[in-house]
Image 1 (cartoon, rainbow, N blue to C red):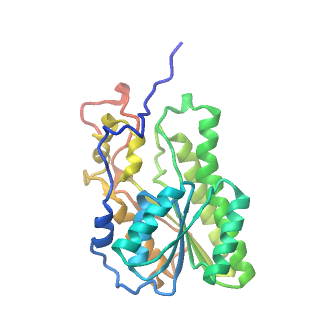
Image 2: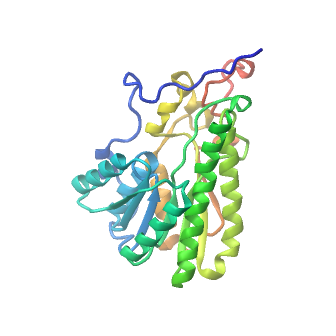
Length: 301
């Protein structure tokens, strides 16, 4: 009997290299946008305590937005809030929230809407997955990824939309998904969830247009963040080979696209999926658990 392959390292291993952008970079990297682009704009970012969400929070604060972040780990949210206050000189706000819990989502959206006079843009960035061959998924592992990446995103979308409809105000949802066009070997659970979000978004972008609500998606490719901790080093060594530019993106690449969609410049974009992957869709496969010998053709992407 074949034993399941163990391809997940310990993400808390202190010997592993630290990855992602430093807070000093997030506070100082150049941006194409003017500093008051999002003044008077309220933006709620889930998963805002780390990775891409943290980069979005930094940039939105730099552009003058009222920034709200949420996530499951209060300590991460506090650290991001304090870092932005120290390095950007702006106060942001946070809610410790598990987006899998629709009652918690309802309470957060209601409180944030009342406290800040409404939400203009919701960024559904929270999510997570782990590398594993699909044949070996446990029921618990499958459900955890689907519940966060699909159901949690939906609770956030629906609650925000209902509040916008109730208040008679426009709103915009930006869902962070993935490049699922060619499938995602060793990440079938998140591929299923993200594909669901993409076509859910395209559907409600039409349904909700009469309410002045737009819905769009961004599909990042290989974006280097601290989230790389769940992948084995042998897999990371070839991540950049999965796109024709042969490099990894970073969280700033995604954050700037989010701010563009949140800005008035994108007011006529609705129901779309914007891919940020260096051309990966035309080139290769990431193999987050490491390329199996069966597929190794001596340098093929």
